[in-house]
Figure: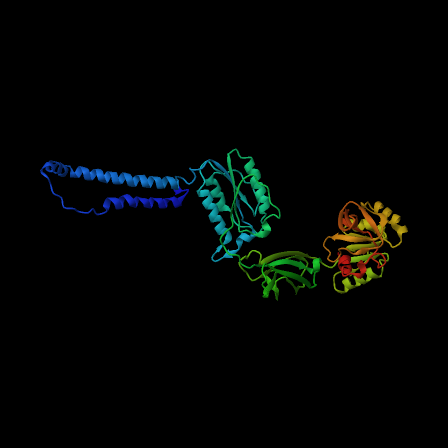
Length: 483
């Protein structure tokens, strides 16, 4: 049982009016009985009980009329939903990461879930509910009865995903358009996370009822990113750095502890201010998979106070140089060898063959068969372009140097920091299949890789010399050579 307009129940207080009128004391006056009235007074005394009963019945009837009018205005309903026509409801529940924020003794999600239960309690047996979860938008949302929707709601838990309320609203509107029920409504239960809402208004056919919560906002500090080894693979028996960036949603400037746990052991700790990055060196590590996490002290939203990390620790590769790569590449190789990032060796057992203009093409086949990597640097002499392409074709590698251009710049890169928007003076387009690791600003490939045999071949579009590109003079040179 319930009331659609419970405030009208106050009108039931008007039942006191006939009660007061009936019970109010009457003024007693002196009466003189004339002989002609004695007969009537005797008749009144004989019928006093009957008259009193009629008066009480009349009082009860007046009170009942007042109470019925009040109940009618308050719209008493049975079963929670019998007083409205069959309705199709898209119930959007925000179970994204932000709903795990703890305020007081309970999560925001617990309050949102309680409001969702209230919506289902008011639904009628003929209503149909589409339960849409903002944290797992890929789950299906079939039309359910209120009881089925409540059973499904009891199984829902918050997730660590980012909520997209714009997508949820569009999906809800699309589901309601397919409903054959005449009345359609969207109910949105969310904590109002700003990043979950779209930048532009969404046109919707169905009306939207929004409940934004009653919990006050609280500051949140989180781990924004963790970069291992500057984006390069950690090498076995060598130390590496973990760059940890701390973010915050408020103007809080207090330092927070940051801890690095790898393989179940604490490997580093420091304190960092919000919007800053701290470097934690760790290692050395053996060859294999390294797992662990970075954490800070928990706050109201605890799900973003820990970030898991997984990386592969690889042994230093053996590199064989075929041809003259130039002084800058030689210096970069020397630095990497001195720091234990690689070792130099012969072509017969090398993990990487660094070939200039296709030098040593006769040994490529055996190297690729055992899963080695071949890196091709074009020669500074443009006349050798054709010879390089012929060697690639003879080896069955689907890569080639295209037409030469000048005055270009590097575009978006993949995995190597500092390679964006660097000048390219002498450059050839890298054509063919495979994957583009670095492209030019005009959209042409500059660094492309393709699978060949059991290994791979990488082709660059410029010699790594100072007159061909400014890459050798930038901080990206050594990371590029290692990558």
